[in-house]
Length: 340
Length: 158
Image 1 (tube, rainbow over the protein chains, first blue to last red):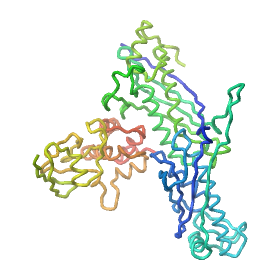
Image 2: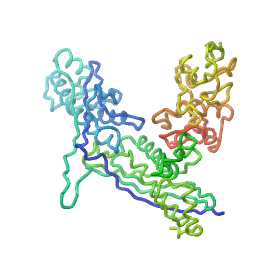
Image 3: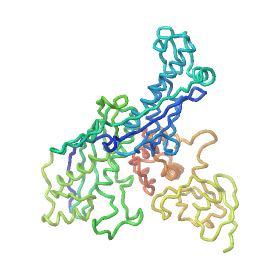
Image 4: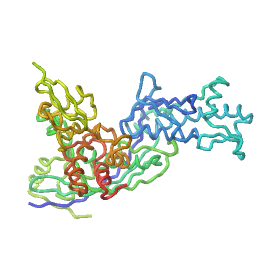
């Protein structure tokens, strides 16, 4: 019985969003008489941080404090259309739509402020703290709250904006089959180290080191949170989770959490992450998206690490102890590969 | 079937309810007391999100018969914050981004409280052991472990 240490690497190129139907998302932004702004979306925040990041994008574009923006999500009855929260598209697609809507709302807000201050709107700027003033003359100022009140009750205007992000349709070339499925790509590289036990077939994660290039990180802590959690999902896909362990035979499928396995807190490993920021030209403030791609490199890196450790190439997920043992037996024992 | 009268302490307050025989504590807390902080996850002790403290000890409320807690003291997440202030564990969970979707969080916090109440400065291994009966689908556990260590005044993360 021996435990064999192995190291594997994988790189990925991940498309942000998709091409189907132009992959549209819409956003509506309007001010309330209190001078606060509401962003209406149908997009869903299921803990990944959509509300936080669209709030930041809206506040930055409007030029108001982030506390003055409220994001109302996930109601497809009352919100504008969104394709959904998947394909790592939230920050990029929804963020772009919010940015467009906030830009239009900002235009109305500046016109309303210009009318109150009796100046040209192009001479005005926001200070990001809730005030609008004449460029170079901060004392000629009005608060966004007073502008909202004036627009609502005096000028008869709605400070509001509409935004949509739509990908230009990419047709398939009939000769080559070539098309452009996405407008920007995120990248990652991950090195995984594992121990393979040649008596039990068990694979234990030892450590991971990764670099993710995902455009500009609009909220670095949320990005880190996604990468840490996503890598755990990658481990789970690689080594544990399946509803059909003998696919396509449906027998012996798991019925509960005792049989549907996932790595617990004792099965994780140290993970050192480097985030590289290369702003995307068509992303909101250069953002791409850290969504699904944070799980993807883990699977091939773990499979490669198992090959490096025991010389068995397993191309069927998840890589269960049974598959590892059968493969080791078939080749007459573990054959550790040169360590690089 | 006749109802059974049942009295116990719920987050420091005496409560009295009538339960059907065989009712589990999770249902009693959620449907009869109105405390929605213990969550229903799997209903068979596999996920840990229904965790509560009974006389300071960690239990799965979905596997506990309500009638067995007569006269005992139940703590749930609903009683964790101290007046208007978050409990140090809740604050540490927020600071360390230890919740994403939030469904496992009540159980994680109760498991962490059970640990820190009996062992104020646990090692990382002891923290991992303490939450090993709780499943989290989002965070990868590391932020949760870091939050508990931070609340214990141990190794601060971040």
